[in-house]
Every structure is written in C-alpha cells, then in structure tokens.
Image 1 (cartoon, rainbow, N blue to C red):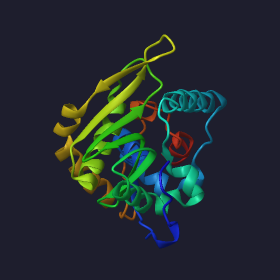
Image 2 (cartoon, rainbow, N blue to C red):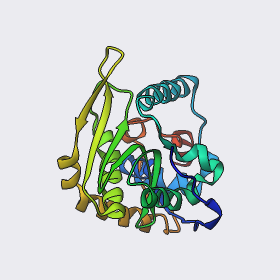
Image 3 (cartoon, rainbow, N blue to C red):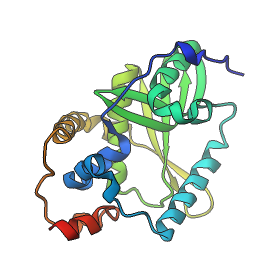
Amino acid sequence: MYAPIEIRYLTPQFYQLSKSTFVKGMQCQKYLYLNKHKPKERTPHDAATLERFREGRDFEYLFKSRFSPAVDVPAVLGNDVYTMGASYTSAVLEQEPAVTIFEACFISGKTLVMTDVLVKEGDAYTIYEVKNSEQLKPVFIWDLSLQYYICSSALQSPLTFNIVLNDGQDGYKIIDLTETLQANCAAMEEKVTAFQQLLKESDAPAIHMGPQCEQPYACEFKAYCSRTA
C-alpha cells in the first residue's frame, strides 16, 4: 500500500490549456477561443453523445481494473484535482520508487494533461491512454502527442507511451506510439505557444463554418456560429 501524501503542504499550480481544449484548437481555433471566452454559448451534448462518453468511461474502467494497487488522483483530490493534481502527482512519484497512478497530472508550459494510467518502475515510466475505438484515428495522435510532449518535459526520464484500443472482441489492443509522438514534439511546442497567444486576443478568429464543425467531433458552438455568421 502506498504511503499517504500530506495534501495541505502542496502548492497549487495553474494552467491556460488542457488536453481537451488543445484538441478543440486543433479542430478549429475559433472552437478553442469560444470555449474560453463564450462558455455559456455551448449547446449541451445530446443523449447519443452522452452515451458514447459513458461507454468510453466503462471501457477505460475495465482496463484500469487490471492494475492494483493504484493511486487514483481524482478520487483523492476531488474538485481540487485541477489545481493540486500536478503537485500531488509529483509528490507521489518522488516518494514511491514503483507506483501506478490513475489520472496522473502534469503541467508544463502552462498546459495540463492527465494520463489515464501511468506506471513508474524506477526511473522509467510507461503511460497508457485508453480510447474506446477499434481504429487509430488522427485525433488520437493530436491528443497523445500533446500528452507525450508535456509528460516528457515534466518527467525528464525514459518514457514509453501506448494507446489502448478496443479489439472488437471484448478485449484490448495496445500500440506503442512512442517514436511517432517523439517526432511531433516540436510541432506541439509551436501549437501550444500559438494557442496560448490566441486566447489572449480581444476577438475570435474569423473562421467560416465548414467541415471542421463536424470533424472529428461535433462542435458545441455550431448554433452560436450560425447565429453570428
């Protein structure tokens, strides 16, 4: 069993971008901007989308059940996970020579990522990102490339990064994407800098509606953009 961490001694950390907002920016920079500056204009997710989210969480939970014991960061910190998660994760990793963490949090360059499963063994780290899909989609590469960039910057240690997909037969297929993600680090640095600058602008970027409103995900601001076009 892992020793408890004294949370009261941890330092809050803050961020401007997260994994989910970064993916929005990769889909459409206006999506990213509106998500920050016009959050009340979002259209709520429909029932089908909420069901896909639930199925994804169930798939992730089943994969995580293979790891025991583990430190579950959101379960420990609750609503404080977004401000205290990175400090808490760092404290756990410093204290434990070998540990498994669910939703380990890392902040670098004012950007937050939370990894589904992180396994530390000595100075080496293995990360698993779980996606309830049978296909390796381009949007997953965006997601994992950012995670790899932030985690490698924060950890400064050997890092293996895997995606876990649905094998279509009630099981998993694990793909090591480390080399692909390493090659994307320079592009991630450029994107993070550009997106953070975008969020400081006084006006949303002038982007017309188009295919990006539906791909890879249905944008939550389609109704707003339709009214204001």
